[in-house]
Picture 1 (tube, one colour):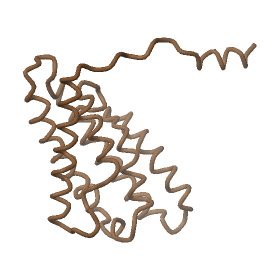
Picture 2 (tube, helix red, strand yellow; picture 1 turned 30 degrees about the horizontal axis):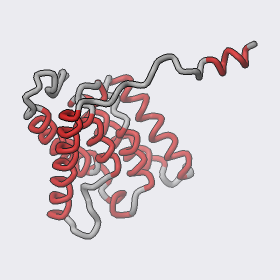
Picture 3 (tube, helix red, strand yellow; picture 1 turned 180 degrees about the vertical axis):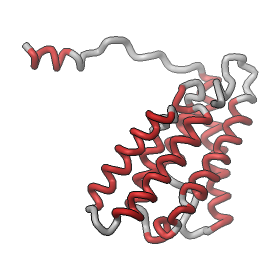
Amino acid sequence: MRLRNYFNRMRSKDIRPSRKPFSKIVWSVVGAFIGIYVMSIFSNFFSAKDSFFLLGSFGASAVLIYGAPEVHFSQPRNLIGGHVISAFIAVFLVKMFGDVLSIELLCSLSVALSVLAMHLTLTMHPPGGATALLYVIGSEHIQSLGWLYPFTPIGLGVIIMLIIALVVNNMSTNTQRHYPLYWY
């Protein structure tokens, strides 16, 4: 009986949502393109060979802030806080326990503690977990940034993406499409 109840919880409770209107899809694509393009140019300005500002977690953030600007995970507080807090946690763990703990434990702790911190600070932004993980598994170049990592590329990168999200998400004539829903 318990097992059946357990598996019943995995059944669909709702139907999938319908596709978004074409105009919303277009604005999402335009925002994602411009956001990542600007990050690429900015990255080349610093170092053409290692794409300093092109982090996977920024690609995931682009999906949220340009493709779903109305969800709570996409709001500026979440975007900035989720990435920066997670970056600080990762740097702390590597600096304090990098020589003591296995890479598996560091990876697990960085993401788990980032989730905890984002919950406690109301800054849940799923790509923040990737930001933490990227530092732990990152190259010598990334880890050599140390306490600078939360500020650049992370902090500066999310500010650039936020500015683009503010511009692009508010260009639509659709009164339902605006960004942000809230700042703090």
